[in-house]
Image (cartoon, rainbow, N blue to C red):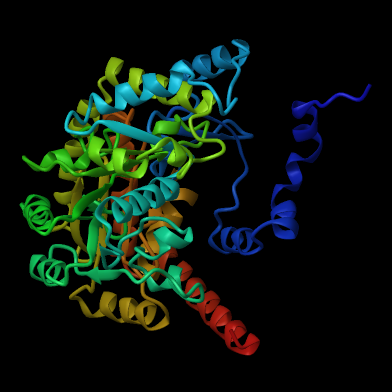
Length: 468
């Protein structure tokens, strides 16, 4: 009998990781990683750190795009998953009611007392798809309003409310939804007066660029929507579960009670994909209006035992370790120390965000020498300077970060919610060293900038030659 040994398989073929990706998966990913020098080989991970084969640690300020809210391999979540596997539960029978989904729904709704019911799917984009369908059916209207530069997912429905052309290009036709600028109440009211709007979907803090909604906007938008019998949909896929220093980011503003709230990412504990759409009772009762409609919206793997166990463990850890309060405290500390550097570095223009969701924005310098280098990068491609900062943070200081969107001079920090002063000290020291280098004349950073410019020009030439 031939057995399967995962440890042996990884030992034999783990070294082929980049070749396998190039051959069988998205071939542009390893190409991009090689170009940037991000082609590291991480051997293991724990908490807020990765470790390579030499045992060197790398500080994770990205958290898997926000998935790793508790850090990597939290022991409570691991134990919960071992326990649920060992329990031999009769999972996904399709025709019974297991306790774990009800228990997790109860726990989630305790943090949103104005909401009543939950639908469980498998991802953030599924949570958005659910909200779009429910809003349309409950109101009997076809159109959703969303914000420019929003990101709500990449499946066809959620792509229709994605405010970035780079993601939408080539995938038309999409649903006939309408974009407004973030914070533009007049534009929202104009759309609502047409009488065909089912709802308005909005991130309390936009992930691209890390732009919080203006003070009072969500409350005012909610009042407009309800006056016109439309729904407020809060996309909390990245901002939810403590990320911003409140359990949900919309709770930062008094009186905001969305009709539908979408969560995912951190609810998984970093192990089992899960998404959830929380909503008001009357919306669910309209969608599931009779026994004939009991499966009118469902998900094959939704509410599976492993995902539910991970979610319950995550919520328990968040309460036991007071991670919402930690995100608020540590986020204020990190943002404050970074903001204090704005007057020191002319390339550094703004530091913004809430909790442990922070945007660091760079901009055109005033001195002639720096301005000429900045112009060189901007002429090749906007966003290259931010990439120039991200690369030495990893290569020289072993800190993983990300540029906050295509063609943006913004770095986004979304670290695990468990970080503390030690990680703040390490990041600020590394960031200061990188900024010193960027402002200090030629330096390795600007040499790398020229490499990025050449790589971008080659990519443009290849794209033109292929006719794409």
